[in-house]
Amino acid sequence: MPVEDVILSLRSMISFEAPLSMEYVEMKDSMDIEGYSWAREEEMILAYNSLKKEVKNKFHSDLLEFYVNIWAYLNDYRTSGELWDRFGDVKERQLVEIAMDHQEILSIRSFRMSALKEVKEIDGRDGEIARNHISLLEKLPMGSMAIYFVDHPCTEEHGFPFDHCFLHDDERPKFGRRVA
Image 1: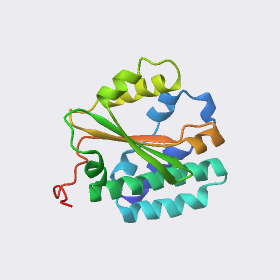
Image 2: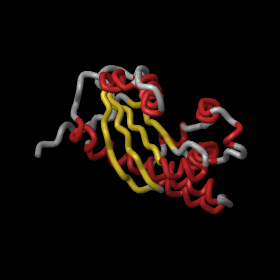
Image 3: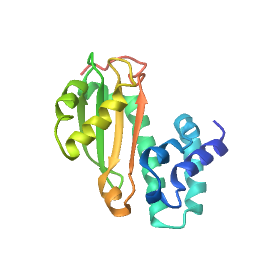
Image 4: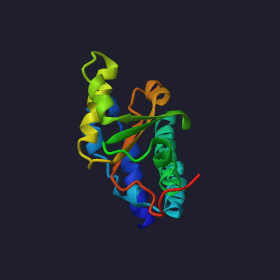
């Protein structure tokens, strides 16, 4: 992937002028994530260093840090197979939520589709979150794992959703399962 494509992709992910005036879906749909998704480590480092010089405020700086850090975490999880080892190969779809606080991981939890369907009937925030996760998981083949990164403190601080979900059905490491 050319570095310029990674820069353009990341720039589209962090360059919202008036994020509060946009609907969440509209904002997510306007992102060009192809360069970001297919970047190699060297390209991501060069793109990050280039964009870091452009960023003029804390909001955009925090957003850039968030996207680059979750990209690195995801690549580590893909290589190590840690999430598959931790939560197992299951027949149903599952969402792994990685909760962060300004780029530090606080918790990692797995939600299987069956458990989310039980929670979706609850009124309030938990029910709304479950319904959103179900709609994401329904797009994936059975046995898939979606990885959802969220930073609630950054979201609160900036009034903007610091979250990203990687919808891949090929997350299993290609080298096979590790034996303890």
